[in-house]
Amino acid sequence: MATIKRINGKIGPSFKITVTHGRDLNGKQVRHNRTWRPEPGMTERQMQKAVQRAAIDFEREIELGYQMDNRQTFAQYAEYVLELKERTGAKHKTIVEYKNLTKRIYPEIGHFKLNEIHPQHLNSLYKRLASSDMRKNGQTAAASIDLTALLKSRRMSRAKLAGLAGVAASTVSKACNGCNIAIASAERIAQALERPLYDLFKTERDSEPLASTTLLAYHRLIHMVLDQAEKEMLVPYNAADKATPPKLKKKDVNYFQPQQISAILDALEDEPLIWKTITHLLIVTGCRRGEIMGLKWDKIDFQTRRVCIDTTLLYTKDRGVYESTTKAGNRRFIDLPAETIALLKEYRREYLELRLKNGDRWQDTGYVFVRDDGRPRHPDSIGPWLSKFSKRRGLPHINPHAFRHTVASVLIANGTDVVTVSKQLGHLNVGTTEDFYSHIIEENKRRASECLADTLLRSRKA
Image (cartoon, rainbow, N blue to C red):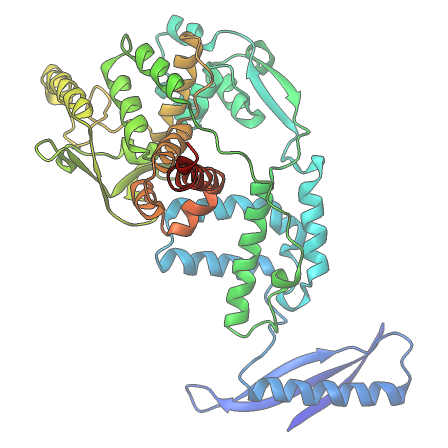
């Protein structure tokens, strides 16, 4: 039975509803409390009727095993959910990405109690996130001088600058290549070089709204947190289910034409063997960058011409470069052409010479693509190198992921079934492959239809 206690405060009356239900581990009765406040303008009779209904509803909720959490804020509960996800197997980098998203979510709805969040609050958040003023600081920076030349004059490597500045090696590479970086990173680089920011960088305001994929990532995180709260019966429903999330603007898949691949392969002939081999593997396997950089010699079978892909190299600021399972957490085997095996054998000779040359400095990590001391290379170093390579050779900009899309498009266009393509790419399910490459699959179906018509129908008219 629920008990109701009236409390007369300075801003008007409120009612404390108490329901006693069950016992704790020590045998003590458990009391559940809820505060109910009347709507402004209610008469005494209306208040009494309304609080009685609220008490009955509260008692029913407790009996059904559900109690709305009116204490935890969204931010507090989200931290619990992220810890729970990491403890139950979520990848560390995924958790890091979630925590980066919370930096914009918490200031907006983090202070809300779980039971106070409604769809309209989330819709307002999505609208704010889509506005041009939601960038963290509104500014980016690009090098105004030749940073590579400056580092060379100081006999300082990019890796050393990254360490001194406390930024990722890929950030330093982007800065050296003239790409925009966060203003905070530029300030740390300038400080490490003991030069004023504006001597090294030019800044500009970034007023571009967040990408639709980024907006959807915020919605998915909020949905995940509230979904857990609903499972634990802390909220009556998942407000994110009833909100209107931003629509994903689907971009055309970026892939290379055969003649473009041929031009890239020709240009690679005069490049360092390690980068030639890395790029060649991206072209023929469709693997992700981290999977190529995480490849170890014992995963390559030179006799059967097969490679096992079951690990990836990742980078986070707190861990640095570390090894993890593949994105889908699965293992796949990819057959390699004879040309690729020949290139790997040539590179292995260079690798062994490098190991002998470095003697005691060498760290035997087993990775295929390493620094001069045997340590693995940064997984994000492929992008900056390819960008520099494409500019130097007069090629279109090369996005490493475009090789992955190229492999998929070539396989599908040549009649390979979607299941096989999905396994080649390491997708968790076939639906992902079908969604990504739906336009190519449809085009292939049309060609197949025309082929049938040519063979079975039109040949009769000839």
